[in-house]
Structure formats: C-alpha cells, structure tokens
Image 1 (cartoon, rainbow, N blue to C red):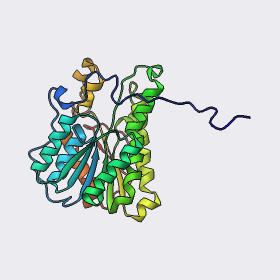
Image 2: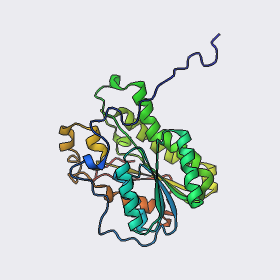
Image 3: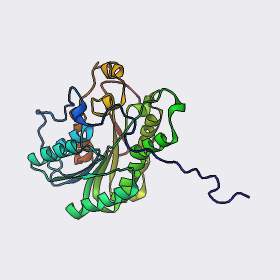
Length: 294
C-alpha cells in the first residue's frame, strides 16, 4: 500500500526572470515604450478609489497606474526588481496629484501577497480595485526544453499570483470593487514557442469567468473582468525574444504595428470604474484587430 505523499515530487522553482536575454527594465528598451498619452484627460472616474496594480512598474501596468492617477485613484504598485522603473512610476503618479507607494517582491509567493495586501490596507484602509497584471514568459522551441522549474515559475507568476492576491485582498475589497486580470491573445490562439505562457493565459480567462460567478464575490457586488492584449511593446518583449522576432513584432496584425502600453490603459479604466457597472466575467481584446472569437 502506498503511503501518503509517496508519489510527491518536490519541484524547485527557478528564480524570476532567469534565462532572459536582458533585464526586464525600461532602460534596456529602444524605442522606449510609451506609457502615457498627452491626449488622455481624466474625468474623476476613479476619484478617491484605492487601486492595487501588480507588475505596475513598467509596460502595461505602468500605463494603467498613470491613467488611474489621472482619474483620481490612489495607488499601490507591486513589482519584482526594477527599482528605477518603479520609482519613475511612483514619481509620475504623485506629480499627477495622487498618493502612491511601491512594494517590492514576488507575487508568486503567497506569503508576500498577504504581507503586501496588509501593508496596503494599513496605508489606505481598504481596496477598491485590484489589477492582476504581473507576468513573465520564456521562449521554448520544444516542449522538452521546458523544465519543471520553468513551468512552475511561469505558473506562479502568471496565475498562482492571481489566486494569492485575490485571496489576500478579498476581506478588504469594498462593496462594488473591481478586479481586472491581464490575460493575452495567446489564450485564444496559442503560441507554439510560449506553451507554458499561453497555458497560463488560458487559465486566467477561465479564472476570470469562474471568479465572476463565485457567490462570495457576488455577495460583495465585485465585478471581475479581463483584458487580453495583443502585441504590445513593453520591456518584456526584448527581454524574451530574439532580435529577429523583435524586428517583426506586431507586423502580422491588421493594424500592422505593435501597440503601445498607453493604448490599453483606457480599457482598464473602464473595467475598474462604474462605467462598466453591468459588465462582469468578460474580456476586452486590445490586439490591433486580430479576431479571436472569445
């Protein structure tokens, strides 16, 4: 007779970002991603709301932080290790008149998620919006190249973190709060060289839909939605792909170019604000025109 845990395999997770071509920092990206549109004018859609953004130091998360600040939200951004990027976002948010602070750590760690949420609640007293945006990806030409450690790492960052953050935040989410999860076009069409990443993004779609109908969520009138970016020019792209891939990045969509982070931010504002009061369990596609029927 087999004993309990006899078949348990102890998987060692690799460190975040191990094996990337370059550091996932804005300073390494040319041209630099555009995170703010001078044409975007806030109208108080998130006035005095408290929002938490994971992966809020650059790229999509950074653009969302800036747009939320323009709409009057006070912010906490969680980030892994790009100190300069995080400081720049905090500085810009404060310039816009909003309160903001950053917390450094790995959202793929349940203990960190709990401590971060407690720190945010100690500062602001509540949470009105949670944007689960942290993500990582690693190119692998063959499934045999994906180690158990890499598989575990990708799932921890991309989907486990969402479970951890929602679990930690739920007691502190205000009635009528909003959760917005970043998924991807790869959830719908896949990516042959991002097998583990695509799998996590598909899981995020299912997580979003399932969570939106959870009774505990409904009892607090919390809406849960997602945004599925297409090819967006962020530090993650040159940090992940070869130079050849980077040069043709985004040219295969109908608009024939990659999107900029600021072009996604209004979708997050919509889903975090009362403008979307009758929207839950849905995903908005911001992908340059690729039809995915999802």
